[in-house]
Image (cartoon, helix red, strand yellow):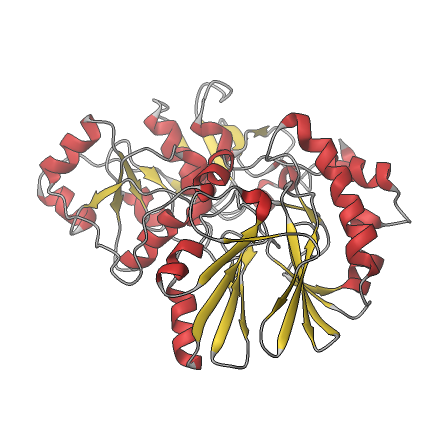
Length: 443
């Protein structure tokens, strides 16, 4: 089961006796419960490969549905679970599962080798080995970053690469995950494919070369990553299928909440936001990457009010926030912008244009890796995520913001207008609409 927005996969294994194993589930239990129901299965066990930094685990949700939780002994969880250790072999009926210590992405990381009789069937590699790369090692502590990168090299070369070449590798992190290092896409590979095509091991890379490639591949990541390991160690509220709806707020209640520190998050598409929105609202359009940007731009305790339309299912919206640990959802405005306007309140608009215009400072808000593939010669590069903390580096005067398609640029525009910039336009498109581009090779 793939979460395209967070770039992660979880796995459900039919054990053949009416029971199922779920590996690295996310907090929203609905996909797993739906799949279990369709197959007539009961959740026997949830297996964690490591403490996750990019999503809240669904282990406690599935325990509430009847599963037992199995996790690395080094996880130090504050709730009941079976502690798994290197070398253990678990009897799953017709299948068996071997526990392999594979530190790297995290110190406690375990991989799981699934066997049928004595034949290896698949490897749940978590984050130590992913398709076309490995998961980053800088999320624990700066002092441990290189140490864990070296551990990852040894875990992969001395443990995982000794497994059969054609063995299927099922990774948790994958394309689109800010936990991953490397250009790989997807989540499923084979041992031989990673041996021969993983860029981190290209040209017979030794440990030092691997580590250098890992450390040079780390881009920025959402700040909530620094909190979720700890959150996943503790007891969290579980909801099952009783997820409460978003409370309905009146216009005066919304205004009072904002005065008290709440932030309005407008999840409508960028053009709807551009044509009129509540002053101070932040634009984060509803799309697969919604949760990532919500967690990148706001702090977890922030009280959040949603402005939506019929394009976003309310339960999906709430679960997206809960999955990254954003539980302080205080409500929504029924009727959205129509209700705001009917109450006679002011709206703000942000122009969207189709091509570059002279006389404006160009601000490119894409990730650094995107910027270096090609950018306008006179563009200032400021990653969207950095605007949440400060707008000090933004040029004075009229601004033209762009990203790849427009959504991130509109989010940036909403942050800047919230901070007092009053002459901002958004380009509906990417750098291809800028004319000549400078690529990384030209810089």
